[in-house]
Amino acid sequence: MEKRELSQYQLAKETGLSINAIGRLYKEEFDRIDCNTAEVLCNYFNCDLCKLFPLETAFSNRITDSEFRKRYADGERDFSEVDLSKVDLSGLSFQDLNFTGAILRKVIFRNINLINANLDKADLTEADLEGAILEKVSLNTAKLNKANLKAAQLTYVELKDAELSEVSLQNSKFHWSDLNGTILTAAKLNNAQIVRGNFEKADLTNAELKNVDLKWTDLREVKLGSSDLSGAKVEASCLIGADLRNANLNNADFSLTDLTFANLSHADLIRTKFNDTNLSYANLSLTNLTLTILNQSSLVNANLKDCNLGGCNLSGVNLSYADLTSANLRNATLKGAKLTHAKLKFTDLRYADLLNTDLSSTNLDDAYLEGATMPNGNIGKA
Image (cartoon, rainbow, N blue to C red):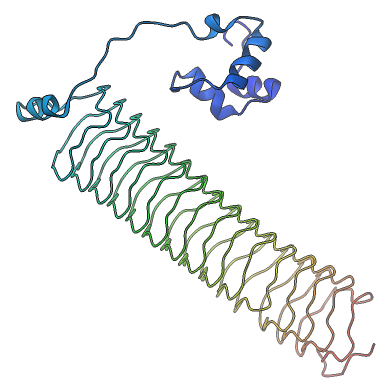
């Protein structure tokens, strides 16, 4: 890359590989080599595998649990890059440990106390940390794939850019923790408490978040596609630009939440609460909103194409500039709503209540208005 003056972005663009994969290779922060990635890079640089990945004999840092305990008792706290794989230290208390870059695969740390520990870049793949106390622990860029963290306490924890795919975090606590850019694909976070956390740009695709508490959390640009957020509490959180496509949001509460530019296309919104929620510029196309609560919400410039809003109560809702093309608003209540400059081409407004609705600069030529109560009280004709 240096010889060709290539940036990581340029190499990703020219090879089709992900910039994350290239970044891990460039920084030598990988523990396995993907065959396809190696083949693509060898072909691109016209070199063999040994040129890209020269083998070096590494000194073994493997220690036993008894040796670790003795060294800790003797006052040692720096265990960076040690190999403690599969050891069992359950129920013990260790503070201010340095486990930077340590290999801790399949360790059993149940109910362990690791307050103030540094586990940056540590490999905790398939580790058992159920009930562990990890307060003020640093786990930046750590690997926790398939780890068990059920009922763990992770208050004030740093997990920036960490990997937690398929991790179990049910009933865990994440108060005031930083998970910016963390990978949590297919993670299980049912009934977890994540109040005031930072999940900006985190990847929670296909994650389970049933009844999770996400109040006052930063979820900007988070990926929640196809995730299950049924019954979740997300009040007063920031989800600007969030991806919620195909997500299950049944009975979830997004009151006072900012969902500007969020993508909720095809999301399941049965009985979802959007009280006083900002959905401006949001994509809600092809969603069923018949039982959705939208009291005092803002849907300015929202994409509501082909939406089902039949029978919905939209009284006082701001739908200015919203695209309601081919949407179903049959029997909907729109008293006092704002529909200025809204797109209503082929919109079904039959028997809708539009009394005192602001329709200025709105074209109703192609809308279906049979039986609708118009802003002036007149009844629309077929």
